[in-house]
Image (cartoon, rainbow, N blue to C red; front, side, top):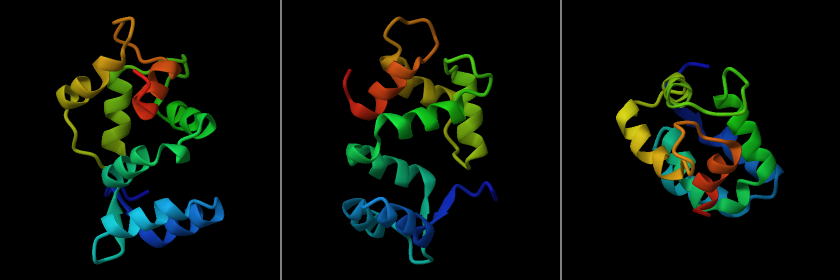
Length: 123
């Protein structure tokens, strides 16, 4: 992992085609830069717009990647650290602004159900 925050369009497209996700491949081409890469955050935003890609299993795997201490909850610090490691430049305050509306019980922890709501817009 080179921590540039860039993903290879060819690699993503191959994986999406293997899963039969042709619609998202079209979107991927639209957000790709001339050098054949796409920013991780742009890809994530595109994937959110095509929620069918984000089934519960995929979301759970993403959740587990962020849940560094494996306690079943995400803290702001865990999310921020993971985003920084993936090349994002999001600040903790920006991330807090994005996450807190989904923290239904206002306990400063994001459960898997709350995490799903972020992507499935069920809130």
